[in-house]
Image 1 (cartoon, one colour):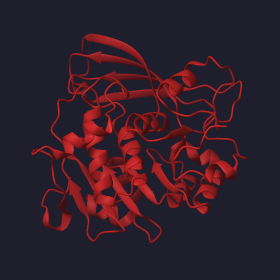
Image 2 (cartoon, one colour):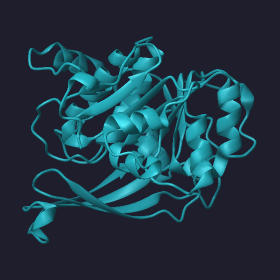
Image 3 (cartoon, rainbow, N blue to C red):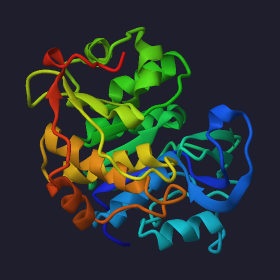
Length: 315
């Protein structure tokens, strides 16, 4: 058997049918410029980002049994290890239809009637050889595996975008690295300002809480530094924001395995996500580590500002 990758993940794998239109989504309608079919999904794209950055990544959710399955072949082609994933003849991807406006914003319509999560008896001997487990909202279907991974000492990185009530609350509690879209985090906590939301999500067991906010940057709090912080966005030519958050999660996990502290992990992930939106689909512009390092070294790279001294808190 191959070596267990440093970063494992299970969650949604998607086949995305994307339509690019000549108007912003707020216009209500527009002319079709281009169509494309691509592979996506939160965790799958995050793992592809890890591999592109030079890390080792393995998908350990359900995959179809056929050796020529399109999803399986795409993961392999993306550099993601699949040898440890459980197989089932009825496993299939989430199907998504995505409309991307001229401003790069998108609307996703999806059908998630699929086998998600992972096998309930997924072996500890595999989990124990990894350093990070990336999970998304569908991990509520495999909560015991997440709990075992946490007990085995893995860093649990949560990409949570929607709630199923108490089950999602328990899942979020298991995540010591919680990276959420600000909109969902506001709904989950009842907080309004990023500072309020960060405080509401914090607990002693957390290592980091990060709130992503698209073109307004990211907000974060880490155990290894004092204060609440805002990192403004990189200014890049936006082509398609599909998969930017997924790339952020993968790049964050990669930086974590390299020993970076909170500020370094967030800066690296934000730069990777910025580069990812300069191409179409969620995978076309996934960056290399060298490209991320170059962007971070630019004189125009943003610097984090402590929230308490920063008037614009994204409210």
